[in-house]
Image 1 (cartoon, one colour):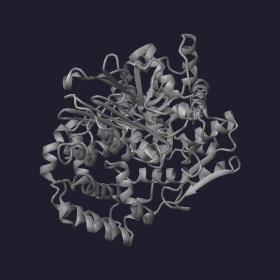
Image 2 (cartoon, rainbow, N blue to C red):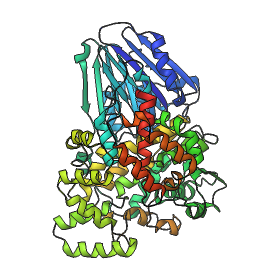
Image 3 (cartoon, one colour):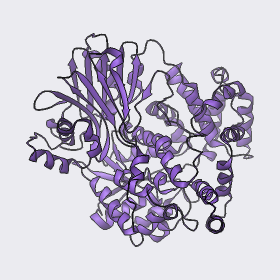
Image 4 (tube, helix red, strand yellow):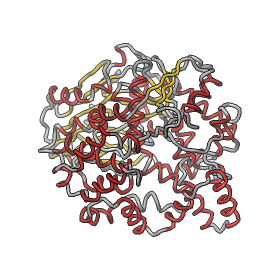
Amino acid sequence: MCGICGIVDFEGGEIQSREIDQMKDLIKHRGPDDDGTYLHKNLGLGFVRLSILDLSDFGHQPMVSNDGRYVLTFNGEIYNYIELREILKTDGYSFKSNTDSEVLLNAYRKWGKDVLHKLNGMWAFTIYDKKKNVLFGARDRYGIKPFYYTLNGSNFSFSSEIPPLLKFLNGNPTADEQAIFDYLAFNRTDQSERTFFKEVKKLQHGHYFEVDLNAGRSGFDIKKWYDIKDRVKNAKPFETANEYRDLFSTAVGLRLRSDVPVGVCLSGGLDSSSIVSVLLNDYQKDDLNTFSAIYGDGVYGDESKFINLFSNDLSNMHFINPDADTLLNDVHSFVEAHAEPVPSTSPYAQFKVMELAKDHVKVTLDGQGADEKLAGYHYFFGNYFKELLYTARIMKLLNESFHYLKEHKSAFGFKTFLFFLLPEALKTTARLNEKGYIDSEFSNQYSSQNEIAGQLYESNNLQQSLLNHFEYKLEHLLKWEDRNSMWFSLESRVPFLDYRLVEKTLALSSDRLIQKGQTKYILREAMRGTLPEAIRTRQDKMGFTTPQDDWFRTNKFEDFIKDIIYSESFKNRGIFDEVKVQKQYAQHLKKEINISKEIWKWINIELWFRKFID
């Protein structure tokens, strides 16, 4: 796990080492153990290393192949590197190290870009072919590892994070207002190649690029190598819950491959608890370190009662207590760490968990991705109800509606059902009416161009919705996970996103995912007898939730927030109706409404502008 960066000068100018050093300095937190630079005429490559596999100097990058032709910079992990290495050895390839990096480099020598389909892991890497004078780069299937780039005049620059790229712009960066609108109206980011900076793009998940250094800017080309819809169409679904259980255990076991300590971020929910339970039952990891955020008994977001169900089995449980004061102290470093706005303080809870973990382990396992493939969010009931209506299964719809009410005693599933039935334009209007504080001119300019109401909300059945979540929604969660972990020099692994597990799960019929008012049905059945029953059968959904409603009513935060929303810079952005913002915050303080997510977005946007744009 590392950070990578590089520059190509299309006009043939030589890249200077100081340029690469500047980029490396800004991502050193991603790899404090080692760093390297490769310069060749109009190409410069940089690397910072977080040593996970083979801690020796043999893991140094940029890594040059034995024949001297290829040069690799690689961020990520290839979990099946041992199996691939054995195949390559039989074909005559030799190895100096026990790293997955050297396996990747030789695998590319053998298979070229087809190697991508053979990899089980997470990655963003580049390989320079000195003979062809071509730079090849690729991202993993679901976007677990980041890759940002700019095409700025005569230069192509790339990095694992955005800040190094801002150093090489022809002027100050500018805000992408469409990205800001989508963030404010829909709580979504990263659904396309856009970032919050107009000049910076991200290589989409499941894509690769090639840069022909002989052809100038016209030699830059991007192509999609992984299509989840095609893969799922041809996948064989799980036949039994036990089959799911076996493959899930295998996925967790693969992600234990490490030469440094491994721990788990334990929220007390179904997903992270399933990982812990499999490690205890299948791998006898009773020395496991777990890391959790808690808030106090009875406080919203606190899941201590579920986390503590593991207290008799684990001796190394660690806890941290984020609160309004810690957030206020950390807010500027949190904004800097992410470099783009996030739509709630939930990622901050994970930020604090990673801060806790850094003193005990170097690798964590996390439950990210389970909700998107197992229909874990409650709005998926709306998609399922829509599917049942559109396929005229009315009795099934009535039966599932009854069980939903019985299990959850909530109208939320029905509200989302009605919302998903609206025409696309009305969906956007409904979201804007909920907010009420977005400047009308700003809204009029960007509301018709959003990529969410159609892509994410127009699904006609549950499977289509899940597939669209993998294409347009999951990646922002993975980005936050990457930023939170790497800011503290940690590698975060996500076993639920083993591609074999994803494809077979998404090929399941809807009633294997939602049944009788229960989400994640096949996982619940698979974990019967492994997971504590109170967790296996729980129906509430929290994750890394924080009691932010109360935080933003404290005296210290009231002063901080008012300084922002009454400031001239906030007023002059042309994004907010500041009078409505001020009125809504006054209502929040009086407990007439709870709008902490919106308040956080006001704070985050303004601090982001001040840090990165102004």
